[in-house]
Length: 307
Image 1 (cartoon, one colour):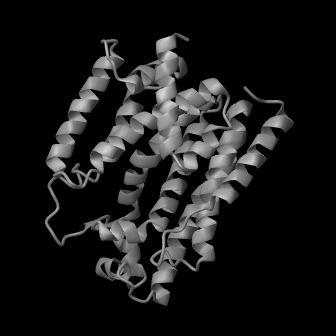
Image 2 (cartoon, helix red, strand yellow):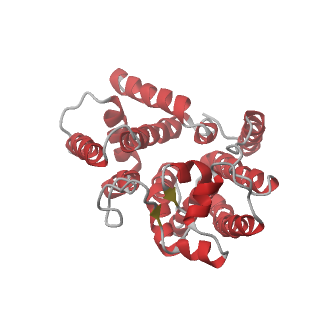
């Protein structure tokens, strides 16, 4: 690896270490080459997220900047000169691990869904809410923002059974549903209700009620029943994660195990708090993440892995 390429990967590792939180604990359980590759993917995705999430700027401005950035990435992808360290590292990663260009484009598509897409084509009027009518609609959103990440990651992890791709997709759904449950209050404050309207209706809840809960209104039994229903859906998709583990390369299994363990522990904390995701943001404490990481390293030792 050239000095320039090594420095570009170091930049990506720094971004991941600073920003990745749950993900970074899994990254460090990977062999060095795969850890570099995952950090390059994360740094690319992080920049797209940052551009799309800058709420101080209108949607149209953010979309324009994202489009310009994506065009610059496509040029770098074609081999044109670039000084962007993330582009340089990701170009190398995509070549090494045969990552399809369309998957990397879909990573960006996921970040832009809240800016305007086939579903949200215009700036949201003040006081209106972004919602999803059905779980099928929400699944499509989760696919773009989370499953695609899984489909990229398993190409770096390595796998030989094609079933791993479907299982990686469903694992991404589990992770994103967990995020949605954790972030109901925060999302409501931004005018976004990700829980499907068909589910709210089933449990006698309205989007406006959920928005009201972020201001300290009392959580009622039907709210908890709604959140419990969504948690059970997430548990269903976590079963795919367990099925996927043996299908990826042995040197990547400890990292995947760490990631699945941290996310499923987050869901456990949501349930242990009786679904009160409104009083405070629920997190997996650092000491628990470190314990899970320690167990992950133990799995590496048992399997004779390292690097």
